[in-house]
Image 1: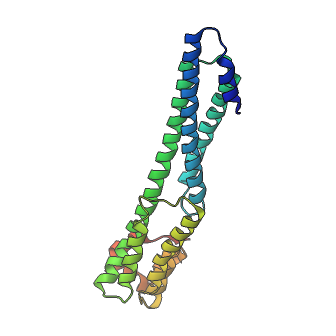
Image 2 (image 1 turned 45 degrees about the vertical axis):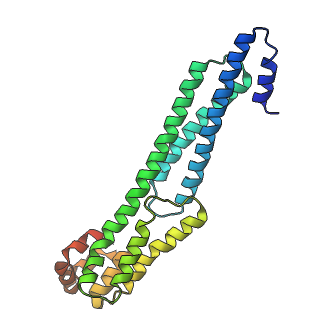
Image 3 (image 1 turned 180 degrees about the vertical axis):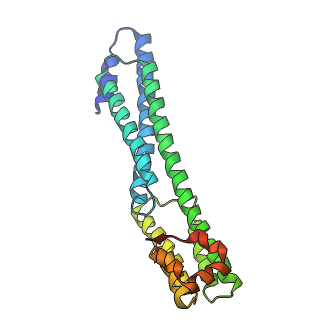
Length: 227
């Protein structure tokens, strides 16, 4: 028997039957709500753990901070329930509200951050995919398919380490598709390096690279170059 259940059992012998029934009902209600909050916290904790294995998910840190604060509040509330002394329904409700607000904010941070991450991937590579399509490059369809596959994750973030690995594998299809576009020369190498985050700023001084970017100005949006 848990300490809360034990406390409820002891309260059943309180002489004032009406007061006993009220207190008992309030404690059971708070306990059940606290359990629901704990289930949500566990779900968020698993989600955050899975997402941290993916590059670019710094937004998870903010969610984990809120989750830690909610957990701390929940432990204190549970301790008051188990002690049984000084139980106040209003105070307990206020604490529960604060816990659930922190959990909701953590959930929003993860959902918003994840969608932004997926959207940025599409916005970054779509111009190159469109340019490849116009030029009838052999790997254009594969690149478009890789981008579309990644966008399917927008509203369904990975919730386990296994699904996070699947996402990472899907994301890797984009630079692989870019490498298979058939782009040649310095411009081709530059685009492949840029897709993998390895392009250098000095490469932009090359006439062939500049000519390619000049012919496809929308591609500038996907560039990430190092110094």
